[in-house]
Image 1: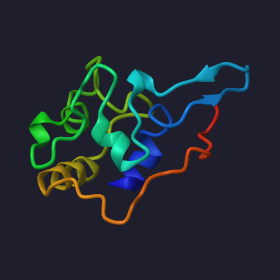
Image 2: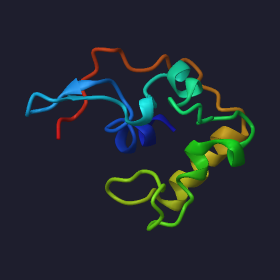
Image 3: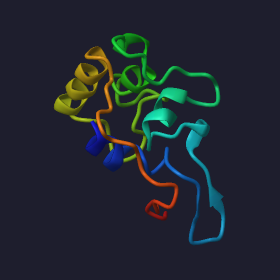
Image 4: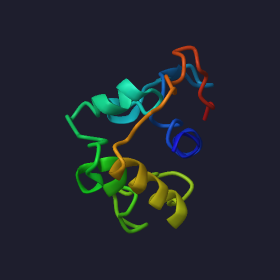
Length: 114
């Protein structure tokens, strides 16, 4: 699951950074997907991003299965996920959303600038 989050989600849901114009960019909705505890914390509007064992209650899953033209579909940049990526995320949540040894990205991780 991490390769999907890293390639498709961290751009908008990672650490704060200063863009080329000098503007500080923060994680959208305060949602950070770059470490287990941040994923489980959810977003600033108390959205349950991952509910272990319950993909239908996990917005990480429910937003990626929305129609491509829906306002809330994620990821909102570069098109929707593939069917295989969606299945992998659903299966991961269904099986308990275990993180194994993964501790997350360090705060010093640099996101790609816009």
